[in-house]
Image (cartoon, rainbow, N blue to C red; front, side, top):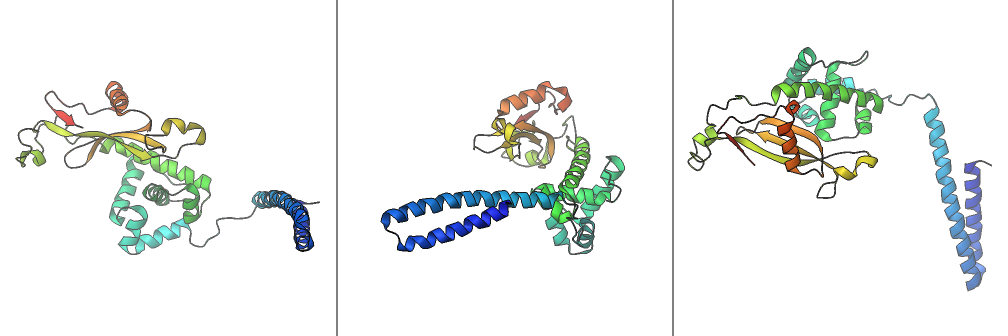
Length: 277
């Protein structure tokens, strides 16, 4: 007998048992109620098993899933031709910045598409996930690609942006010869902070971590995070970012590692210059 047939049979037993309770004494009612509860527990189990079998059978068949006429390419084209607010809301940047970033990443930082997908859609997938923190399944539905394809596009886009960041996130002047105008033109800070070149601090960013690795990422607020150390100048531009450390890691350990490991390329201040924290 199939799972579904057993489930239907048990449901009939439950219904007949429920009818018997109307004419039974109190003791019999209690016994029938117990039997109904047991049968319903079994029937719920059978129902879940049946639904699992149905889902597995459906997923194993070769049926097209992403069949919407509004493909990711068409949606992106519509946004590029549409109102600027729609584009900004979707990708957290203007159309002009998107086009400039796309040109830069494709020409200098190795961003590529695939046989059927242009690089601009790969970048759009990446920015959409970063800007809205959406799961791969949601991005897959939006762009009409499988989660495997979305994951691959996201990895490509993220790798290109990471290569770009190495050339962008750095001090404008490595010698810090000029006093920042925010200090120079404010009597509250000048001359007390004339040798200060920026601020350094750590911040916790929410992280999605596999279940078997979550313990070390749980920070002081009880959620999984990365502890990110960042340095910025007085124009509020990042000059150094060190991400990836577990949320339970102390700021001092991350700072010490940044100083000791030359591969991080920490922007050491010249003699006499300081950061505030």
